[in-house]
Image 1 (cartoon, one colour):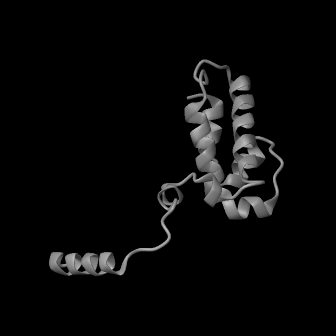
Image 2 (cartoon, rainbow, N blue to C red):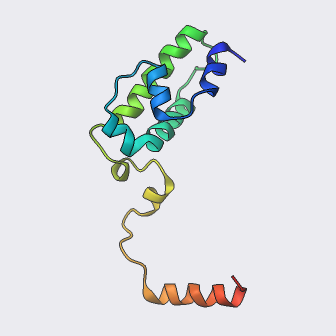
Image 3 (cartoon, rainbow, N blue to C red):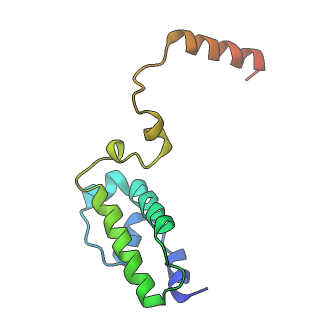
Length: 114
């Protein structure tokens, strides 16, 4: 395990990551989008080619760029528009749940003993 990897394991909040990588941020943006920022950062890390073969300094630099990009995604946008989590992806176009569907679901739950 590299020293960078070991240090990253001690970070838990979006603020921790942003401070660690020296990314300037506005508290109000992070307060509303902290989980979305971390999830987007994770997506960017998974999609980035060639991270495995880099030395620790270059890895830190690339991670910083990707975290900055993830944070900036939410500076001028919103969680609903960015659709990082499945709940926002599934909600696209869905505005109401038919009453008949709710009744059927309730009946199935009762029959199942839930």
